[in-house]
Length: 279
Image (cartoon, rainbow, N blue to C red; front, side, top):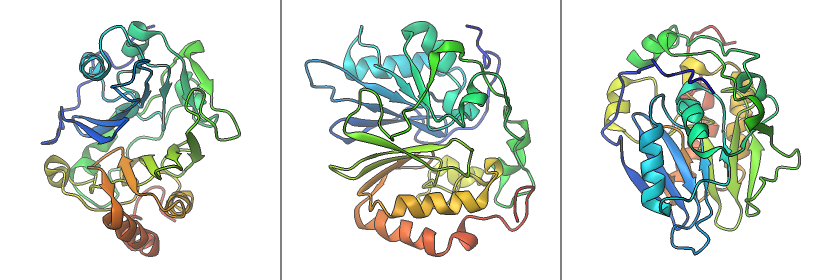
C-alpha cells in the first residue's frame, strides 16, 4: 500500500506532543503534535488485547508503534483500528501502520468514501474566525485515502467488533460519518472532533494546550446544524470522562459544567461568525 502522506509535514506542535497519559485503567491518550489518539486495552492483562482509536499525524507511525509496545509489549498488534473520521490528522499514519500490523479498520459507512479514494473533503476554510491555524488550514491535506479492503463498515446496531463494553454513536457535522465512542459502565467518552477541549483555531492556545470547551474545529466543519445536534447527543450521555481529538482530557464536574455551557451557548461559542459553511 502506497503511503499517501509520505512527504507531508505539518510544522505545528504543542507542549504536550509525545505525552502518553493513562486516563483510565485501560484507556491511554497519546498526543502527536496537536492531535490525540487512544489505545484501548488493559496493559496489565495476560491477553494483551488492545485497539487503536485513530491513527495520528503523517509520518508518526514509528512513534505510535513504539508507544504501543511500551504499553503492551512487542509482538502484540491491535485487534483493529477504529476511526472517528478520516481527516489527515486522524489517519496520517494509517497506511504505514497497516503495513506493519495488517489489521482491520472500522469506520462509519458515510466516512468510507473518503477512506477508499472515492471522495475528498472540502479544503480548510481560512475565512472562519479564530486564529492562525484557521488561516493555514487551506494548506492542510484534504484528499481522501485508499485503504482498499482493510476498511470495514461499523455494524449498524452501534456495536464495535471485539469491544463489547463500548458502542459507537454517529456524531456528524465535522464530517458526514464522524463517530464518537462511549462506555456505559464508567461513562467514558472518546469524542473525536465532535467537540474539543482547546480552541483549535488559535496557534497560541494549541501550543500551550489551554483547556477550554469548544465545538469541532471550525476550519474543517461543514454542517453546523448537525454539529450542534451531535454535541447535544453527547451531553445527554452524562459522560464522566471525555478524551477529545484535540486538547487535554476533561472529567467530572468540570466536564459536566463546560459541556452544558457549550450546548446552551453553541452558536456563540462554536459557530464562526462567517465562513463557507455558516448559515
